[in-house]
Image (cartoon, rainbow, N blue to C red; front, side, top):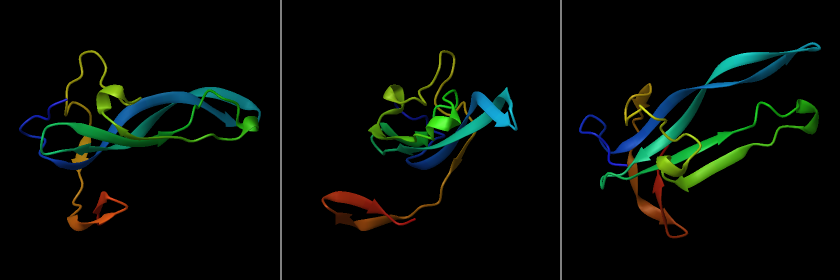
Length: 112
């Protein structure tokens, strides 16, 4: 997905609504949450999502299995845009992260 002129290349924190269930004592009820994820917008207009999350519908008695996604475009991610959404329509904040001229195992690094 190409970024818009207002969304310059960089790493952004984005937020999307999420729903699931919470258990308080013996009572399990539906709850609304916000889900945060990172999106790296490249200078060539493509992007990559860095995200993690668990399935809130699974019982906690089985433990929490965290699913991590990296290296996927937003289009292929669980945080893909829904019908009617466009790039930049979700709440976002561009992070001030300086690039580093270096590599680790052949991959570019960022200073956090």
